[in-house]
Image 1 (cartoon, one colour):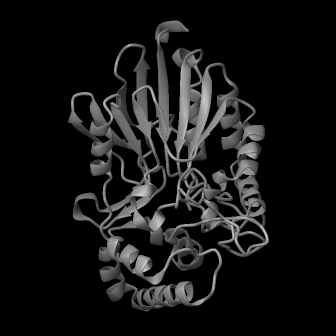
Image 2: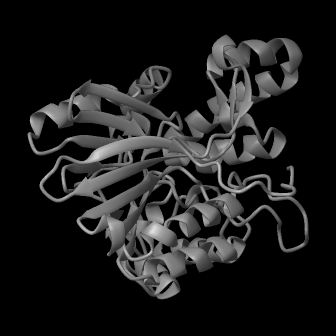
Image 3: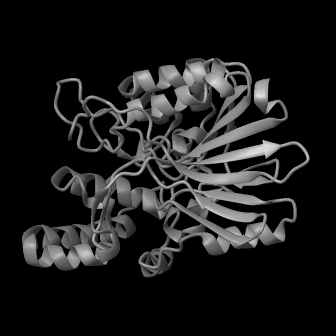
Length: 362
């Protein structure tokens, strides 16, 4: 196994939000597609397939929100009834929209000592369905694993992170609903309804809307420079909120008090470092915790041998904070070295890859 005889590696990314592709079948731009760095991700996989990594054990961990099933229509409409058929249809459209990426992912999973690991996030609830997992296994045809809650191995704890946010937390005691329904559906958190019935409509007018932070600063700006849209966005949210609670819906298991609590907590977005610290010091054998979900990459060492990483996102973010003002896209990931008999070592990296002659601008 070459120079890394006693080593294995984990390469962790998250929050790609793959949709149906940048181009619709009629050639128009798909405004709900966030991911446009297919070539760069293919190049990263190539790097871990060749040279010194060719015959080495490498796990590529897709730590949640790799797919974006919440922003894909099914038969020309958005629905919160995510049945297995619905999830399969959306997954197939993603596989078609990012064909070259999945060709390389298949090559990766089929290479000796290489494996692809999927972890559930709040944007890819379809992974809960056995049929979706089977479709992905058949598409990749190699070493593939699925973890619906967290993945813990060799002193490393990996979890998407949505469970620590009230708006995107699954009820792990009841992933599916079937009572008074013709077929089972996924028990979605409040945040999924928000995306399906509110955000998808807003993005058709302002595609950058969910990439901006902090949102409070954006609304202050919008009320002055984009007044009618700001008023319309707030009115639409009020209508969505009342629709959500007043219209009978067997898919909804959240009451008014819970929703108000979620809205109250929404502006106070934790960085997940407190949750990471709790895991690191409650489990003696865990040396590294990796989360995603926040879209903000970070590395924090609490003490020697106790590290927290967040992988960030490969999608564009728009900052209104003076210290990071402007549009930015950082292709960050976490690389972990695991050597037998030693604590794992983690590194937050930014993929630079090869220089392309051009990149399409949307």
